[in-house]
Length: 350
Image 1: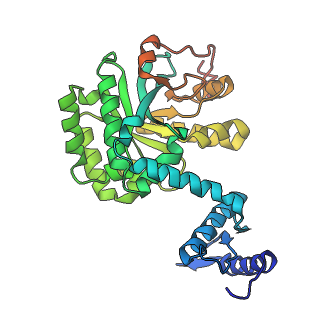
Image 2: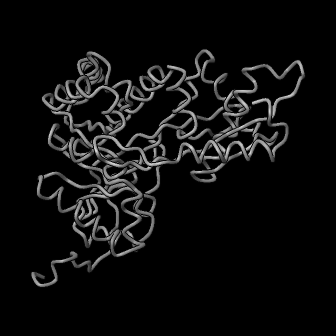
Image 3: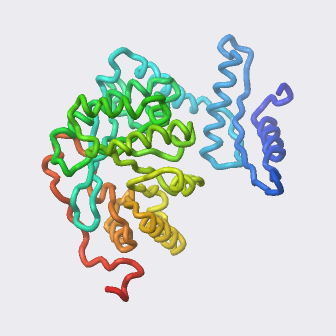
């Protein structure tokens, strides 16, 4: 836009764009609210200001606008360069030969809330880079997916986790998160079952966790793989239930052994009576379906007492146990729980 020469005029144009976009849209007689964010940059006639650079700067500004909330306009500033440099550094490291050798796995227990018994240990990826130090999965996994490198990393992580799980007591399962690429890959179920046989780990010692987002990528292929794994004895867990909008439909289509309640759904139950009733209703739905419910992000005794009182089957979170390296798992036999918890809504029966 050649008529915007400074930040003030650019913001004015951005505001007009948002005003045009943020109007209700009617589809099949239903009105949908639409919101948008706008990122802009002011170019200059310098050799480094190429079209791709201008678009990249505007993209960085867009992410800044999203962080500020919908209906926001952000203009690129040099301070926004830091995330781009960080991403480029991560991209280069991910593409490096033998990068997967820098990966390691920690494990976080999933605990039976009736007894404190360990049901499973969830494998969580960790990456320590010589230059960047500890890089969290929330940062490097989305980039690895965009670069189409996630398969290589997932294979390495799964091999490490399965090898560790072989030494655990037979009643403790390995929980592993499947990416959308794995879940929707043709023949993935057969590949995973072969990996288990080769490693000598019984299929009923593995539970795979899948998200609604992963199912959306290719539902038919995902359903085939889930069915193949379930038929072989692998437990299937629907992860982050309550984070999206279509999860209940999947409960009709697929057979799940556990439903992991999204952390935001769990923590919201502390903040309001409506949040508490919603969590109680979701746990009740799990009970009606005969599926175990697992509460994530239990990070205080108060929250632990709440989910126990609502009848949740199992839990996971820092209050119960933090993720630990494999060599420290042997010291975890049982998790101490709060006592004298009366199930919510069952006072008369008690």
